[in-house]
Image (cartoon, rainbow, N blue to C red; front, side, top):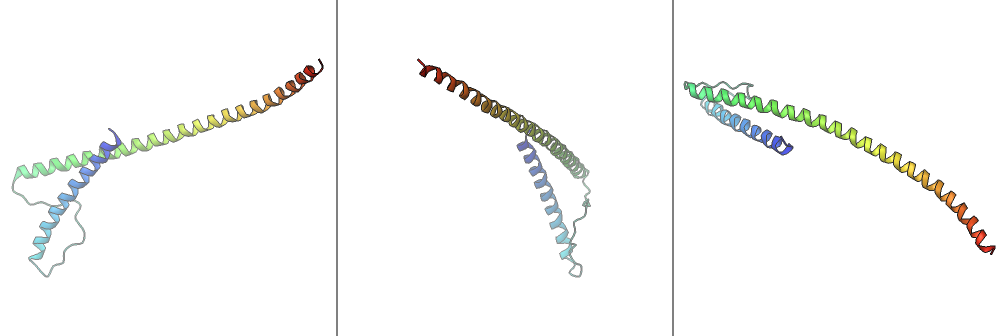
Length: 132
């Protein structure tokens, strides 16, 4: 699953949860507004209690809750994998940088040694040319 698909799945899950909570929240507000002496609760319950007599609706809600839990678990697994991949990628990049530094230092040492050596030979050769 790509990162984009994971983000879309997380966004869909978040939207579904928000819509459910808003729908249940407005239902609670309507019930609370009938009694003006009671204050509207500031916290939402962890598991909303739904009083329905329709068993199909209860099954659908349970199915959505199970699906939501599966999606949350999938997102967690994807995030863990992404963190592991990022760690491996950082280690690989650091290894590449170290190898490049070693190659560059070896090449610069070799080029400075060869410049010194070629310069000496070149001067000796010029000396022989002028002797003719």
